[in-house]
Figure 1 (cartoon, rainbow, N blue to C red):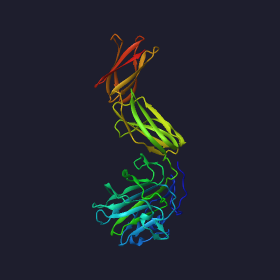
Figure 2 (cartoon, one colour):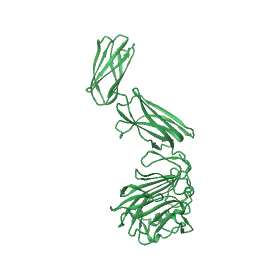
Figure 3 (tube, rainbow, N blue to C red):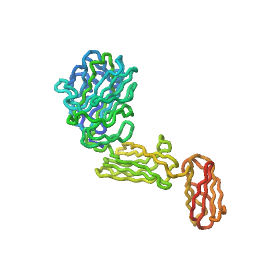
Figure 4 (cartoon, rainbow, N blue to C red):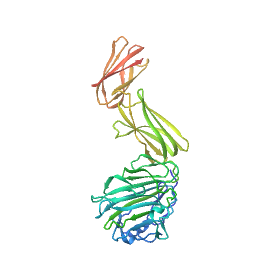
Length: 425
């Protein structure tokens, strides 16, 4: 869907794929520890600006890149590449261990420009665009997150290995991206989001200095954390600068009851390689089922408005969601729209023809069970009486009926209610 950039790392064993992926590396236990550590550039002088790493020797242990803090000075690890990005998504698996006081800052992650220059570490705030801190907590293996530039702290504490996703928008316009939770998130101009697993720890935080481009990153292990151990795995950096929509900028999505139907409406501000939208529906808000699909507009910068009518709406509360699908099959989920329909717990539609000796029923039942279907004329005379066994959900049933032409009244009686409908034969 998005332009694939050339790899900035010419190291054997590093694969570059995906949406403008700059870099990707995990750490298998194959006996090539030095190769994988050096490839990432955290543990050697192969790449410009790696300094003070002797204060936190590194190793690849159990498939993880591990740093063990030993010295009393700070340890700096960085990759000084020109990423030329305005929208950056960094993702890695992270865990902490070791004996460190609660609340101590273990690691600061910076993105910006000139964070290192010819091997000399520059004061992070001078070159930082955005940064966050990972702090130790009292529970072993637990950490919290701090918005380092703006001084706010996340309310949650996390234990064990977690996937951290850092999304930074240094553009002067809003963008959208697919979150780790699968939802489509908007990110205003010059702001960032931070996810711990599927938990959104920080939302729309203002960058510190938008004039500092997203050219490189730096990891700083603090001098105040002797005996600290941190591990990384599955490190990925993605440049999304060319993605003004990732993949669809969904501006609205609504669901409204309309007689016995539910009307869905949604709009997009732009689309890129949008194949279609799957219409998903749920009766409990947990399990969603595809009920139909609507063709997308492909690639366009124009505003597009879509509508869909669910003519077989569920009774009571229903939950609707859009699954947008790219031409390459990549899916993205919208937020959920909730609506209370006008449909009774049991309902039916009758279709009759003068030429046929039967009526056709489309029946919805909230639960499986027995039902009685009857037909009356306008004088109240019963013309048909049929016992039905209904499955949960929608069923199509044919009932024999040789009545005269004209207006009739049909009733459906279940264990819970009786509903009626007029029809013409």
